[in-house]
Image (tube, rainbow, N blue to C red; front, side, top):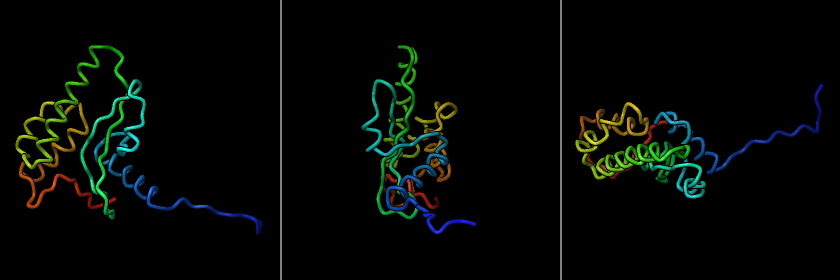
Length: 146
């Protein structure tokens, strides 16, 4: 049984490796989709919203990459206003987090963590370190495992 003509293919390479790492980070962050800046810049703004989550260094990789959530576009002006407020609060918390002011990041993100998994992820990192950035902090979330 079988054939000598059977060929097997695997997809390998840095893009596939990075994609796998981004998928793992999405699970840790608690979102369905994360995209690199290359993808986030190309999605149609009238159909989806993008938001930078943070800068990450995936496990086993040299490069740091900005990762973005991709969410459906709001259906109403009221929904747009709510999303923009939440995204703005996340951006303020992220700026504090990346600059090393983890106490401020904690305070800014606290009100939205129940409804925003990306904010909860950053908030949780501040808690793990008792609201103090580690020595030598450069604003990059270092992922230890895939």
